[in-house]
Image (cartoon, rainbow, N blue to C red; front, top):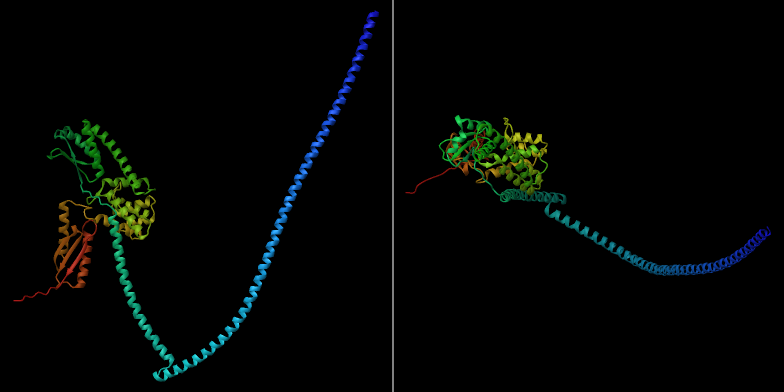
Length: 510
């Protein structure tokens, strides 16, 4: 028991000693940390003091620099002010000197004015004396002499003015005629000519006459089916190795030609096959018509046309007028219109558009009883073309009144394209018949002795007897013949009627 008590006392004593040692250590550590903190605070204080001192010195230097710059600017401003003061003083001195000079000049001018006034009074007195002397010599007063001179000058000026006006008018007429001819010639020269031969039949070549029998078919059923499907008459006669396709509509003839070509190449020819091939070819031709129309508008740089107008333009490829392909004619007229419009200062794009569409009334899907120009105008109005374009289309053959400057341009260019030598050709029989009709029509008038159709029927020379027809009657005769030709005949372009009346005096020396 005593041992346990001894051990407990010893443990308690050890624990107290350990606690005392621990407290001593803590106190020493605390003092050391305090000393270290004081040292760090002192060092930090010195560092902050140095930084503050350096910042103060830097601010002081910057302030001195700013002050020096401000002082320099102030010195410069003072120098400039002093210079301006010197310049102003010099200017004031100059102005004062100029003022003194002006006063001297004013005095001299006043003296000169007085001298001039004195001379003027003397001149007026001398002038009055001379006028009085002249009045005594001429017996006229000054007012009467002045009026007489004014009348004389007025008459002379009027005569010279009339002469000058006549010269200017003659020169203007000559220049205008020359300029107009120059524009037309340049326009024609800048457009190439393309010609075509008129036909209403198409010849389809075949390798042998045996194919004719296959095309005709048993009891003619194949040829009847082909004619019914295409609307074209097939003429199978003794013409060797050829079948003639006859029809007024060139699109139908083209469909029949292509259908025949495919049927003969394929070898299967019977009514069902014929209907199938013709339907497919018609679709291909319609697509080609649209493609040709689009390509034409792109080539000419014309945009924004209604799709139906584009299709009608492509349809022109298969139409001819007096042997001239209608599409080529319209393209040529469009280019001519653009060139001529540019020459006279109008919008070339509008003129080209009107030129391309001017014959659109020749290729409608239906056939109304209207002139092609009026029908074309109605089509253009239906598809929202501009008013000047519609008017140019409708009036290019004078069926309607011209209301824009583009209308005469289209009319002239249409005549140029149609009247160009070689542009249009007719079959020989129709050509000869038309010339004979022209001459016979003119010969039917009294007083006409001879008639000659020249220039491929575009000019008619009419020779009349001088004893039966006067000069005034010749003018009336020319107009009557032109009116009758216009009313009763069909002809391309225009026909010029020239009536020739001359008096011949003949005698013989024997």
